[in-house]
Picture 1 (cartoon, rainbow, N blue to C red):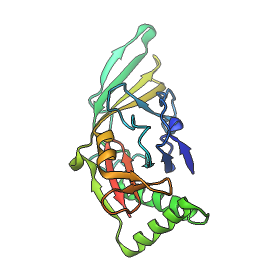
Picture 2: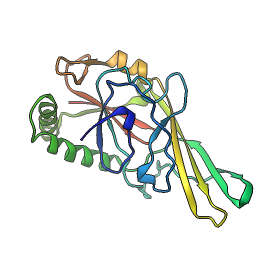
Picture 3: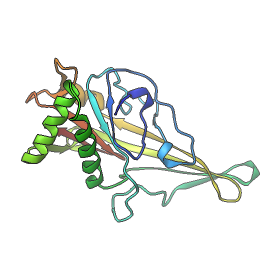
Picture 4: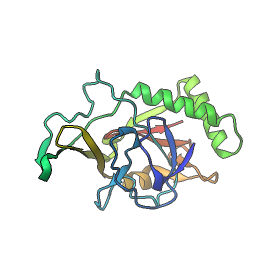
Length: 214
């Protein structure tokens, strides 16, 4: 369940990621959207550029939810034709990949599995499950806390219209400052809320980021 940040993946299953290591995250080039990687865009305050920032990031890319008005789609994408008849569609914008309910479900499943183990991460998982049962999990939209994000998706096609591959990159501003202001590394090596000392994490759904404290 633990994955280093330099293999950060947008798989449909939730991953709990350590942000203690820096490292570039390569752009994905795959016809299978579940294999796309979150790629840095080179901006000074890129998404999770603060690999140096300690703690834990919860990332999820849920299955596409066509009923969601906030879903990121390729509607209005700019088309660029290439030699041989192929072409690329590119769109930059904001939106989610699935519902928050999907994120909550996958987080719960991941913590239920982690709670069966031992050590700091199992303690953290049990604390999360207890907070869910007690209704005390606190969630805050990080756009109200100085974090903003856009993403650019490029989809390449062969001349016959068959999808050749795709890439997704994020331009997220304010993440470094957020982590420094609101979080701290605990003696257990995990991310904690600086104000309360409770466990903390970040849930990412497309360009929407949520700060979670339990």
